[in-house]
Image (cartoon, rainbow, N blue to C red):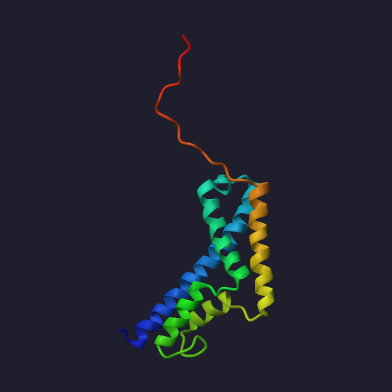
Length: 145
């Protein structure tokens, strides 16, 4: 349907999205911990914290179930459609991104890190819970007669 270079581009885009996902989860947690001590208001933001929690919960559940990340599956599909593998014929930047996202360590270490990181996020939620702000109503308070 598409040319090999187009599929390769789709693979590069998918890998970049994967790196952004991982970066957000990791750096948001670092930001939350630093912000906790510096009293930054965003670290208590309910929406920010729920997005962060949701992202790591997805990763942790995938790991516990032994399911490959959909972004990895998608990238591999694009690379196969382009007639290449991730290890060859990839641009320098994409090899760099790949080496950051897919560090060459034993699988059990990844499992430990994913599950451990999920636990850290949950512990942070317990000890530094987000603040859920309700919207103020436009109705005036009830008057006593």
